[in-house]
Length: 456
Image (tube, rainbow, N blue to C red):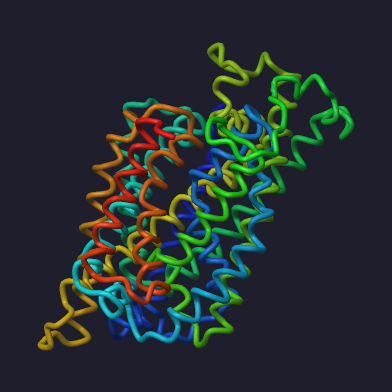
């Protein structure tokens, strides 16, 4: 089944809407602070939705149904770590950030320790977000666009560049205000798309009882509660992984800290973080249910799989395949737009935050720079980063493993080492610049040894 004119029209209309939001937001940006922090007066609920949409990218939107199909619901138990993460972040991290008058999160490192740690923090953050953005581009185009639009893989580079350009345009025009507004719009599309998909699949099954057929789940492994580094996925492992990721990201990532600083006070920032956790919980559950529904549909309709696709070995592409062949006209375009939304919300936030960090590092101390010059510099930086990310995405196919594994191995490699720097700066009173610098390098080496050489 090919996408119809109506499907394409919906996708194009979505892209035009994003550009319009960026255009109208651009009229409100007069200074670099407006562009980066939205004047420190943005709605905390919208900031929370934006934080959720930013962190919950195409990587998660596509990988979670595949993870559910192939391995089962253990990954969802990470939601149990959210209340503890909310307590730690809200009580011990957000108050520190809100009390410091900064634009770049990494200014905090120099205030508390020194320039070596600040430079290392910037390097870690940019490495983290460049890897993350390039993986998003590749996953969206190769894992989603190719099966949904039934395109040739030879078009992946061209589509990656087009997607990057569109995101760069509206991000550069509107800054953080455009990012937040488009994130909220994109979140609505993501939630609505999943709910509609679930309803349609259930309508195609004989009854809801079909989902409770034990034979559908016989390939899932047994559930283990212990913490075991040798096992790929246990409840203990996923709980610890989720808690560590949430705390490290909320406590060291410019994309998160920038959003706290965009609100007016500590209470608003805490509320924003709580909203992001609720949004993440809800969409993870919806994606898990979507995975079960897609698995049931293709188990009962294996003849619908094209080219001898194995149900479990190629679980990552079953959701995109269903979008193309199982949804009615118009809804396919809507879900395709939802996947675009997941990618572009994360990419726009990454561009905005990365450009803010780079520009702040370049312009700090140059007193001859005025607000207009600073604003232009940040916008130019966004454009350059977008080009680099688009070109870098061509190398992602050389990473082996299923999509969920790629996320853990590549995208999250620098998350904990980056937080090491902030932990030392905020909570270790006798920490020094030099010692923290070497602690960060050591933690990165250990992370690489674990991810690529499987030590421990």
